[in-house]
Length: 146
Image 1 (cartoon, one colour):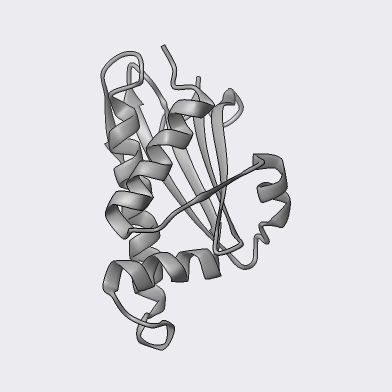
Image 2 (image 1 turned 30 degrees about the vertical axis):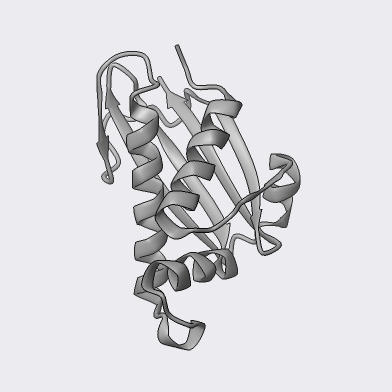
């Protein structure tokens, strides 16, 4: 069994709300993807290795990541550094992956290191969920490889 887009949306919304106290507004994933600017986005990948192989990709604008870091560190923008922004985005993606792991078929481990045996050409998006945080885009994708 693979998690559905509804499962993914529920997990992401719960993690961001519980961990950061932020309310995510649902948004069409295609619209969110179109709003993301590769030069100004924060991308985090967390890998699943085992009976299920794949990854979570969490993409959001720098401003969405800044809002998350401000909430995580109870600080204002000028007191939040680049490493705080990256650490917060990474932590959210890892917590999402940990929660999704129980919904995946088969045993697997969560890793922040890309496995060497990853099949770069045989991947497919299983589920995707788009959101807005204070109007800024957040997109989380569950991708299966192999």
